[in-house]
Image 1: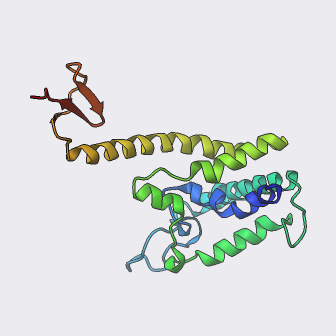
Image 2: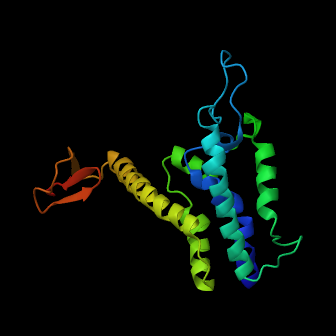
Length: 207
């Protein structure tokens, strides 16, 4: 188990840096704008009006996230060697990802984006919580990863609430015998009702 924990930051770097963008695929960071604006061009890409901001703010912060993950790995005694977690991993990693996503041929949606599109809870705990917890254990400060974790927890809360509501709603679209569905009042009106968001099911008296 200790060896698995040491490898966690390295194996999780792609998710930490890019899946946490949640609403966008990686070409939104790396794909240049179309050379001919009059021709149809698939999105996403870095728009010409913001490309300088992406280079000034987005890329450096992605590098910082990767560097934080590496710091956690080194603190967990993952060696700074070529075969393990070398210090130049950030540069090599960004070069590798950038080359692979300058066009939409590699527009593979991250797992967290797929979850969002399907209205399912994201892998916040697996991707972020574990790294945050390990960083606290070894005393490594990772402010950017913690900030992403905090923001995505708020997003996760809303997704989870809607997911539960849909699940209960679908369940009670086929109401149990001896019940009726009451059209979404704001509160229960009698003791024989139970709230199953977003509907209330009234249990009818038995003959």
